[in-house]
Each structure stands twice: as structure tokens, then as C-alpha cells.
Image (cartoon, rainbow, N blue to C red):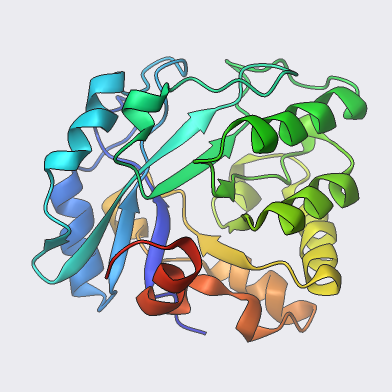
Length: 237
């Protein structure tokens, strides 16, 4: 399975990331990929990007050196009510919006019902959100069946985040449970890197291995082509 578009990448706009947008694009081009989404962290995550960073993405070309650049963000869910850290003005030009839970913005190890309500409310309150980020993080255990049912009802997707297997506790077993539920419910997924360095762009071996282990249907993996993503999310190619 070839991943044509990496939908979760970060740039040195954030200080804990070590490559520029140009370096990420060059890596994607070198690897023969069709596109990447630039999804820097929202402003409430320590060194997250300023809201102007996101609103200004409207000025970028859609293609840079033949690589489709999708304008995006990884927003932070801030509480049980599902509020996120970007307003409508900053979200307006974005094509890919990942909503995630991060420990500086949402206290870890809360009761699963609290975390479940946060995910459900984030989906209900924020129509621009189209991907749930690293849902399998063991610090934010929730009712996966309830969250994924809402994902299915609202036409969103879930990422299987390669980086999580190395840095987020419990991710392997939790992502396996999530992937099995997605398989059962027919929910599309995307395989992402969460790249913080350009050489990691497009490298999703952990995610691919997990899906292979459970015979996950290839047709439910959306980012095997730019066209499939465009048809699902409704952006222009």
C-alpha cells in the first residue's frame, strides 16, 4: 500500500519541529508523493502557531513544484464541551483540520466518559474538523465505539498515526481496537506520519503493519491517492 498524501505534518513554525515547509515539500517530491497537508499545532499548545499563520495559508499556491499543498491545522480540543483553539476566521481557508487531545491543553487520565464527551462535542460543534487525531493515545481513554459511531454518522475519518506507536502510551493496542471497529463499521481511515522532521514525511510503516495484521480493507484507506481524498473531503485537485 502506497501513501500518496501525508495529511499530518508539522513545520518549524513550532519550535519543537525541525524542518521548514519547503523542506517538507522537497521530501514529498523526492519520495514521489502527490501531496502533503501542513497541519501545525493550534495556538494553545505551547509553541503552537499564531492564528494568523492559519488564516494566511489562503495566500499559498495549491501546488508547489508539482506537490499539492493542502492548507490545514491540528487544532486542540480544550475541554469536555469540545471547544477548539481556532476561530472561524482562522479555519476558513483550511482544507484539512485534525482535532486532537494534547496534555498541555486537556488534562490526561480523566474518566473515559469525560473524554468521550469531549470527542463527541468536538465533532458536533466544529464542522470544519474532518479528521480525529491520534485517538488511540492511552492517556485519553474513551468509549471508542461511541466516538466512531459519531464519526461514521458525520462522515469524518480517523487517522492511524505512525508517530504514536513510539511516543504515546498504549497506542498499539488502542489503535488496533480502533482499526478493528473501523473495519467493522466501514469507517475510512488515513495513515499519517505526524512528521516533525522532513525525512519522516510519508513514512507510515507502523500504521501499515497494524492494518496488515488485521486484514484491513485497502479501499477504506483514503490517502492512497490525491483524487480519493479530494472526492471524499471536497477540495479541488
